[in-house]
Length: 177
Image 1 (cartoon, one colour):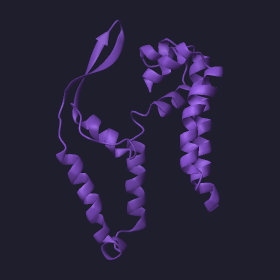
Image 2 (cartoon, one colour; image 1 turned 60 degrees about the horizontal axis):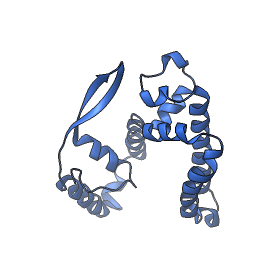
Image 3 (cartoon, rainbow, N blue to C red; image 1 turned 60 degrees about the vertical axis):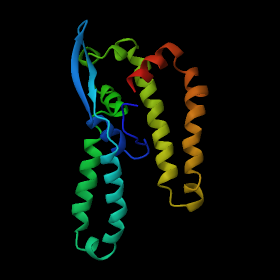
């Protein structure tokens, strides 16, 4: 209710939902907080996007063969870099190389010690490397375990990560995510 019907599988869906919201920066006790002022509820754009994706099957193989591969590579590279803007893992990865007094004024980050933020980021990067290893493996039988590896992330987060980071800090970092 209040948001279009989307799914989080493809990166463009959350970005599309975000683009339908009017957001204002609100300054509160010296911190900048984004406040959603209005959300446009529409199912039309999502349906049209998926219809166009379905119609793209007619571009195979002839019209698609005329598009140079570097053009498609550039398009996908742009989409990947543009989606990093609001990615909390990428923002926390950049914090590994930032002095603590230069951190953004984010209340969630101020509630956690720097060591815990970095540990959480490193644990997430290890999980990402694990998923990438399985997803990009040359062996088909390893790639078949990809859904199982994704499902394993939930128990890792709820059973293993709390041994390294307290629940209080995990809750603050989860809000940041």
